[in-house]
Image (cartoon, rainbow, N blue to C red):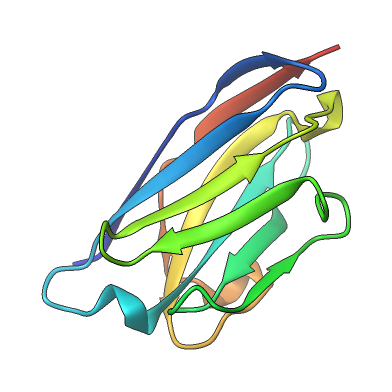
Length: 125
């Protein structure tokens, strides 16, 4: 059974930084076989893609809205996914979710069967 648990959310002023973590429990499966991603959902909006990385962590992709400000990384030894968020803006306010799937990275929400409960990030102006 695959379980994901996000942490690290909070309240930060615009221009500040936060680092989100997603601890993965994958039983006897190898975490390196899971590509993982971050999505976010702002109030009243649909959930949107933020960033994804491959099983090894060598490949990454970002939405245009966060490119150059956010960095996704994966530590397979610790079975943890990270999202370093810099130069935060009020528009980044959302619940952030991590997701995982066996296989290659994808930006589409529907291909990820495993999801965490989310962590709230609030950026004040």
